[in-house]
Image (tube, rainbow, N blue to C red; front, side):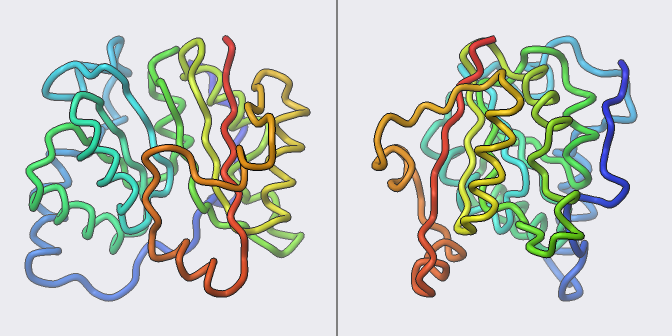
Length: 231
């Protein structure tokens, strides 16, 4: 499969926080290898083969942080399957603990650059891609590290099914405008908003994370964008 261009620098920042100990380290050593998608193998033809059983939908969340949104979605949509990407080790360890605590069997994980996973996945396999509060890389010299770019929108278009969705949330106005401009210039996605309420209010089955609550306390208004991929 031909590889699309990638930034010369990763789209994410640091990989490690506090040193892991006890249960968290055990889960990184024992549980993550079982749930991690191994892209060193040949790409799968059927995405359902990655899970214990086929799902009514398969969704991808890129950069799940502490896993609050991913956990909520997996718990409230038990007939759907989910892939979560998070390179930050401490966030991954927290998610692993949550998966064990709730006995989730509809989540698979990837702990590196999401573009590598997107290039490995089969065509037209995802119903939805969530990119929620990604690093805005506010300094102009770092804008090339923002995840929303033309190459990654190409990737989304390849793996999304006809009628699939790309959902984006951010509390940084400049990144919201950046995303709207890039999607418009790309030309293959349709912004579904018809009124201000469609982007200023969270979509159905949303859960407010600690990060979002902090942003609102500090006076930043989140935006919630849904883009449809007609196919």
